[in-house]
Image (cartoon, rainbow, N blue to C red):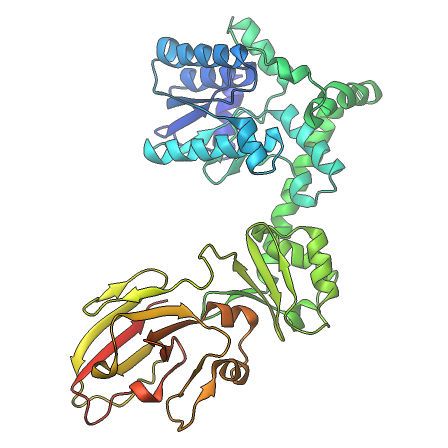
Length: 442
């Protein structure tokens, strides 16, 4: 087992011999065996445990067992936390299993960074991979889901995926390793347990070698996904425009078939599911302005592009103040300000991200805000005033462009449509003595 463990790590480049690994240990046979293998292999490691408070005294006993394993047996750093998992699940409308997953991985990463561990090792094994395959198959998953649990995913490594549960338990028995048994594993109200306790025994009766066969299929699918991802990377239509918004060309998307499947692969990372992607594709020939939402992002169908942005966290209509003498701000946008003498400087900057203003015409504090219905200004170079909504239309602003545009104002007057045009009334002239230079840094 140790030789296969080391070969698996080497073959998949999971971690170097000098790496410092954080082991996620629940107290079950798989994580206990993982800790023993890391110990025998001579790795530096710490142990981390989550008490989800779901099984009362049994959860507390698991915690005590893992604490002794880390501190008394291996004498390594031990980290533990407690969660009110049920409350978190209710607040976030998640299943208990989804809530526990989110909580533990967030905690693992927090400790990994804080304590300078290179990777987090979880004790997923080959049977977990098979169970996950069937879970995702029943949920109508795409190739990523069917390709199963990856051996390595960002800072997460899975050094036991080479072994089946029976092999792990046999190793524990031969080496007289004590471990805890989670009583909830027998509860078939959870889909994973239904598959483990009801479906897979039938599979074994039908085809005794099904574990090896399914594992081989998962490996083949994983390799196929690598090729698939490489192809998608070459044709990806996802771009980032000058305002930092994510765009996808509607014209180019319509050339792909099936468009909804391609779109799902392009934007699933932003939380959009395949059903929403189908609705988006059905709207491609409709009028612009239609909005689609995911839990974290918003997609707007514009004239030529699909535009994606993260959902705003700022309260709508909020105003930010800039006092006289401020040299730089980083929120809500990044601005750099400097007062200079105007002699010898052009009346305006050709850089749209730079505003040259007559400071003596400004009334401080200046304000930053988003546009409102009825806003108007006197665009540089024009004698008359113009509604901001008309200015947006002339420059083909999308819905998101409008909402993301900031205005620098003096009292109730617009001084600068940031990134676009200053107001004629605040430009520098031959009479200007003090110039305020404002640079938008994005």
